[in-house]
Length: 66
Image 1 (cartoon, rainbow, N blue to C red):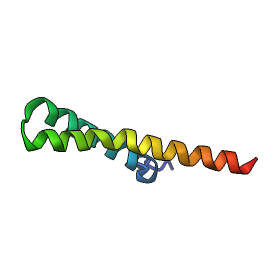
Image 2 (cartoon, helix red, strand yellow; image 1 turned 60 degrees about the vertical axis):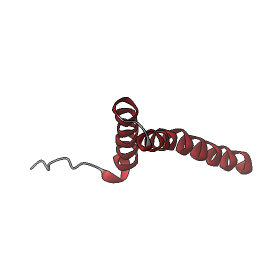
Image 3 (tube, one colour; image 1 turned 180 degrees about the horizontal axis):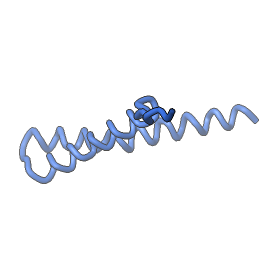
Image 4 (tube, one colour; image 1 turned 135 degrees about the horizontal axis):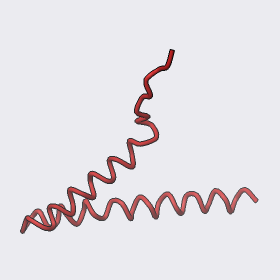
């Protein structure tokens, strides 16, 4: 008997969340003005910030291991 494959939220939760946040930032930047521009900038800044933080964390871990 085959089991139904389940969606793995532990694996895909963060990438999906970051993708949706980026999409929200892009849409806000296209259609809104004023305070929404600040919100769009903050939403679009999250992805590169996360990438830099995790990139530096991985580099430090590799440098200290050998």
